[in-house]
Image (cartoon, rainbow, N blue to C red; front, side):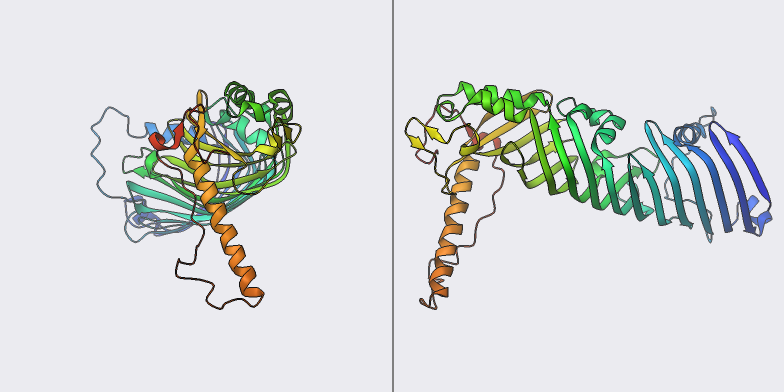
Length: 392
């Protein structure tokens, strides 16, 4: 089969193919051979619209009961190159891919592309599984501009953190699994992701939610004496950090940040929690009390960082667009327990290293630090006016 030039709905390029037993393939038999596609441009939206309308011809469509791509016995190698690719607001360049397609499986040998000031390289496969089809990727993206990423995807459907708030470049490595049913409908609950995220030269500017945090801390009597809200507001208006690393997990329609420590120009903050696809949030933010005011001096003396109790934990629930703040007492207690356990372990190590008793791991256990976890909502928050012996 020779070369074929095409120009359809923005998809412009050249196709060349070498198919064995072409007559058999035309009649519905196996497809074996190679296809090379060289594009000037690919418009994904036009291809998806054509696919959606393929069976909308007024005829009854039989339900699909089997995941199948090509006739039985098929073995097709596909090479794709494109100078440009457009998918809604996403624009990529230098797209290159190598595929191997069989009866019910497509192997993505390699897929490379440049875009959003960065580049990506992944491998993967489309195969039967889960709700019908599973598209799995593993690979990495490097140097993607955060403002462009958020602008391209319309701030991911929320308004609390927008492209104009952001500076920096994000890199990610890990796995992504997506699912569709046999009719081609995307299944959001089938999304599973395990990524390591790294942000370089990050900056947060004018994030309104930080103003709300300063306002909240100002209004409650237990924390208000320790806080200089206007100084805090000023520092939070422009936050810079050199590097930020965190794992991110997605499963069961929820995104989880297990534990993240941010060292920034304004202060050090810990973050952990869950964000659902519906927009519901359940986060805990941890602040060192020494960072919540301009001066370390307060009415009753200086705040000494003993590593145990001088942290304030703020629960942020509701939604990103309408967050609800409260004091997370359970997170505070968990922090103190973990700190005490770690201190006890350090003392035991010091005794052992100084020639103390070999059995310093005494009968009370090895005191392995407990992992901090998000407690249930009904347990984690009390009013700030309800003083507890373990507070502060």
